[in-house]
Image (cartoon, rainbow, N blue to C red; front, side, top):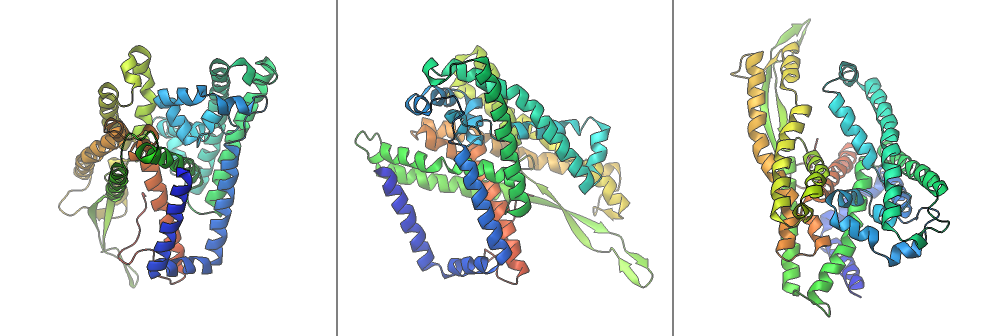
Length: 454
């Protein structure tokens, strides 16, 4: 019953906003008038619905009733932070034993490996500098590596099903035949999900892979809200409606702070020398190098959470995501990984060489080694508050649970869920705004323009 209350409240809130905000109504009309944008949005929604449908299609040979009645996989996901992360990225398909159970996590793993190899393998570094052709080759390598990762994760997931599900869950028995075809279906499911993401990127709106991850996270929000509201006003309520409202207000403030940090930029001025070629003057203008405070984005949290299962194998206290040993270790690892990943993606030497090659210089700083040291020093200083903020975001779900917030709802207070939702929404709205501005319509905001993560 509480689910219907929440759904009705959300619909009522949307209607009130539409009725009272003429700017919003006008913006929606302008979006509808742009035929290309309208088609892209419909195409994106359609493919996302296909993905969500696949998240509930149970692997052939497994009794869906046993999955829904039992709680073995759900409990395992709730007790293990790494498996919980996989379940979030797969939109709940991991706990449903669905054909999309592995989601896009193997692709993300392959992408990370390719990025790390780019620091050590000269051939990959060369491809990174070849523009569009190099990007296509790297994407192909990433797809092939994804299949290799799936050949490891697929059998491991099927073996986990053998250990977690009762014997009556397997309709035809837990045989080698089931092991083989279930692995093939899981591999095909992930590759199909990747294909959906690429189609959304090409013909839809936003980044396809990121949209798929975000829609899986957002799909869990209604259930989390329902559970939290039930805890507040249900028959066995342990809280109060005032506490529920306070939780929503705090969640809003957390979202605002995350948006501010994600968009925070330190601009380094760059002056270009004047050049006279014929009757035209080139250069002589001042531009800026935008250095993001959170250049590493969500990757440090993913790295840290992926490694937190190691201490959990030896000390049970590290399996409690609300305990101080887990959160303290996670925070330290996030800070370290933030510096590590920022050092990978930001290359002061390359930036200084590009400036020197194009006749640019930072006012008051000598070209060459001094410029490299200056950029590196600025990046180190702004990364410190960024890494501390990421560490705080990573442990906010644990803090929320200690303060009495339900586990499912607490996940939205921080971690990968929060950063992915904020980042994807900003990037998508920025792309929508670019279509509006190209057609000479007003942007989505009265003041300024929406800035994405990049």
